[in-house]
Image 1 (cartoon, one colour):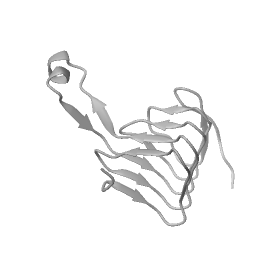
Image 2 (spheres, helix red, strand yellow):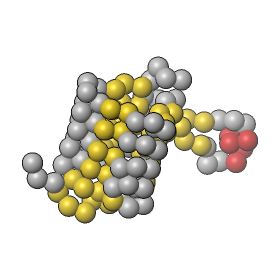
Image 3 (cartoon, rainbow, N blue to C red):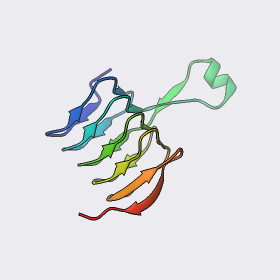
Image 4 (spheres, rainbow, N blue to C red):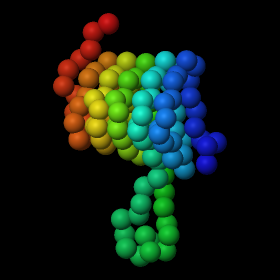
Length: 116
């Protein structure tokens, strides 16, 4: 593990951040990853037989430039967060978020657009 992670220029990753990179985990430039942010890429099989047989798959995670995920954010497999987006602390991002928004909650929902 570790060879599927890509981090952009001037990005800061604080302690206790996790990149579980069975598939690509891409983080853009100027991102601030604060404590306890998780970006897992593996997905467990839902079918009992395949799960018991140890099957697993993965989908990439992508975090755009200048994104600010709050403490404890989980970015689920297959999710893309658009550039210039802020995600509130403790949010679970289960589907993609567009650029330039504030999203909060679990699951994360867009509450407003952000200005420059």
